[in-house]
Length: 303
Image (cartoon, rainbow, N blue to C red; front, side, top):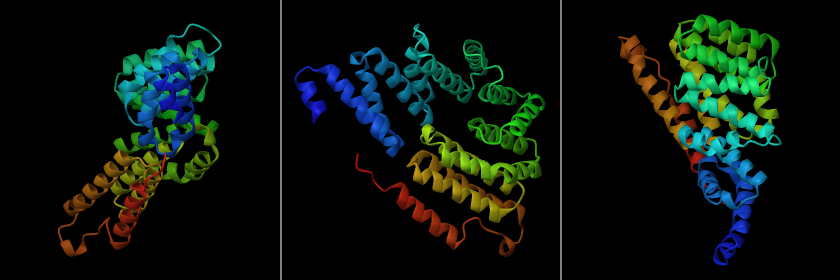
């Protein structure tokens, strides 16, 4: 009502501020649904004071990254890293971190490395966990796996309870799966999964970001167990992953994961000539649980 009143009477600064406050309050309640409000905040951001404008661009920019809208995220974050004043240093630091991660996801590795090095140089992050782990991610993505593995393992020895630990474990699992070291991936998971759960539970400041990453980790462990032909554990990890995505109302990730699980179930037939001996990833209990999670996914939240 306040926003409509402001628009009617030309009070655009009031409208912009009201939209920003509303967005900040409800953003994490339903991440896909509230992104449209975030984009509206950006439309009116020129009417915000400088401090609020930069905060809005950062918040909506990382929201776009969370939803895999990486190009939109780049554009929205750009005003933060281009700001010349120094009093938003912390905000610029976090924006640079998001920007080079966007570029990694877009497979623009040369540009990603350029911004990564800018992040490290401007903010003295050469020994920082995120810098080292993300450097290893770029190494792995560009085929330098033997260089990436020791960097990631060294990080995990020194940092058991660190936000970057979740990224390091996930990246190592991807590498181990790619090169067929399934037992190493399973050992890694057994060693660190409890700590990863604690990181997700205790770090509320990062909103849904760590929880999303944990859901992705669970899905990758499902892939590892499938490759290792442990089909009970495959189902268990995929269901855990689906539960995370249902909690976050992330329909795209949920449906992709469900589709992947169904596809893997069909693929089991290639390994068993006798249909009667063929195991399934989708027994009655698994199907029931998926149906329950689908209902949970579609529960509406009144904003």
